[in-house]
Image (cartoon, rainbow, N blue to C red; front, top):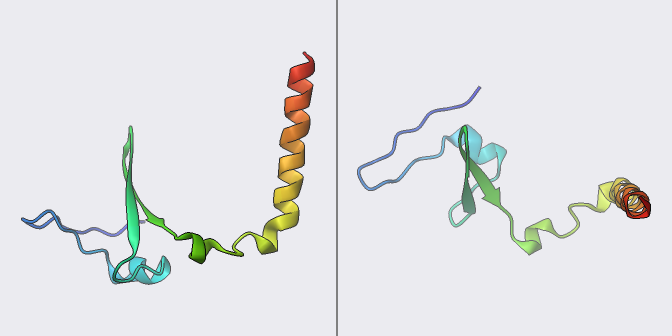
Length: 79
């Protein structure tokens, strides 16, 4: 499941070490708080440099997905 943390008097929270290691969060890492109806998500924000080449191994899958979306949009436009 999840791990808990406590908000300090200065509104700070310590991210548990297991979570920091899993998501490679280090000093200076950026995170974003995303609010949804059910609660709050803490999402790591990667820099463009960190993302470079991230999709390389999945490029064929991504290209196929884009082609499928294009075909769907063309079909919808015909209607």
